[in-house]
Image (cartoon, rainbow, N blue to C red; front, side):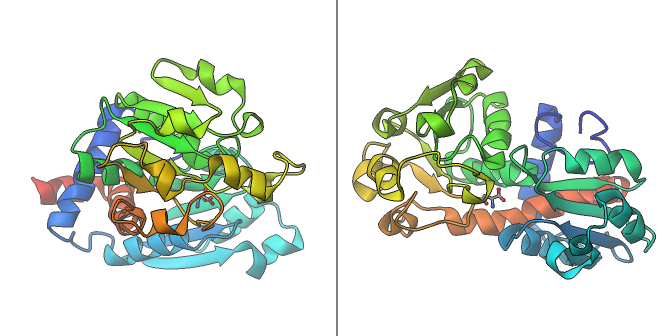
Length: 311
Ligand code: ASP
């Protein structure tokens, strides 16, 4: 899995295409046939320094379905609040014989730092504005379920691109698999550097051309918690220009799917009628998240046993 990544899952940027494909294939196989409890007797630490509903629960469900025990630590209910350093916390918890660390942190790069100091796999469940690799994997899995391919698709990613780790991980993955990615948001939330990222990536400050003929519309939340200043004049103005409403969605292909990593703020980045429309695959993304996270945990914690079982 790239970098020191054969032992960890830190980001999509460090993953080669075959490693990504293997995880997608394994998740698909697990959907057809539930996996065996290959992680029985193993203990997984779920260490979250930022709030989460879907990702944390999804990792816990995935680990338990594979037979592992989970230990969850959240910042607000631990010594983290008392100012313990990240590495001290990790060393303390590692001493409780955990076999893997799944972590979310507000600082970009935090899981990379931890990975250098522990002898167990580290899985990045979101680091600051940087990466959210399992989200991109489950998004790719969901797109494949509906479209059968990624290459050649027009994928519009709309909203707060600047602060979004979901946008970054998806951008790496989708462009590596040959999609045309159209990023769209106000100039303050979609700086010009993104246009320089490479072939197949377009930047739009208007929603209409970004949606025109799109196969996939991925909507992102405005990450208020990462903003120390105002990035747009008012919520009403944002809604006016960038909210994905039913009327605007008609610009996309009639069979376009609508995605959102959650949490979604209805009436702001997405209209309620779009969130609940037959084109929305938002709930399916959540279901697929468990499959992808099982595939990741199995790959990192029991690769040999998994290969033997699937032989
Ligand atoms: N749940 C996603 C994340 O943790 C998206 C979001 O919070 O808006 O990055």
